[in-house]
Image (cartoon, rainbow, N blue to C red):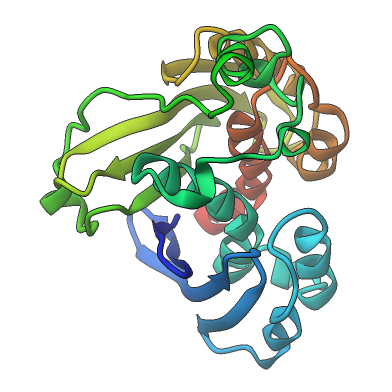
Length: 279
């Protein structure tokens, strides 16, 4: 969703679209946001323009921000829009921006308050996991190095020092669901590497909108403990897509889960819109 660059602050830009195979793009949106180093939203421009989102400026893009988005774009029509999805993704775009700073050896990442590292937040942040053990040993967050991206920096259109999250959710007429997300970083030397990538398949009853057979497949993950979180996807089985945003936020916590996979699981709530677009 986002291209993320460091500096005195952060610039987050994103684009989203709904597309039907035989009709093309049926809805789209874009956002351009700037944050200061305290992760306060300093400016926000959207297309289509919506004067209501001005109420988000001045808020911290972190805990509680998604609730604020829900309050601003509160109708069911709003929640089904590409603009809502982009604003809902700003906290995770801000989160992965920390990796951009980490890769460039930004001074802000050299000394990290241990209280900011939430042990057992997810599989990769397990108390006795690789990442936190390394931090306790060195006092610094280790730098995960992913494999080269299939597409280079030129193909991605990313400037040096930037990161991008891409996410795709698809469903066909038979209810076969496929989804994926990928976080890509471009180094200051112009090399593109993948930090996180998951693929997911599931079956959707297009009449009841209930999911089954949800399987998440790790493709690229930074720490040895991370792939264990893939099993959490099966916990969606038997749930309607309308439940997923609240369900994942409420119950998918701890070392059996992955913060980034959770965002992909939440995004399956958009299957209702995709099914309706297919008519």
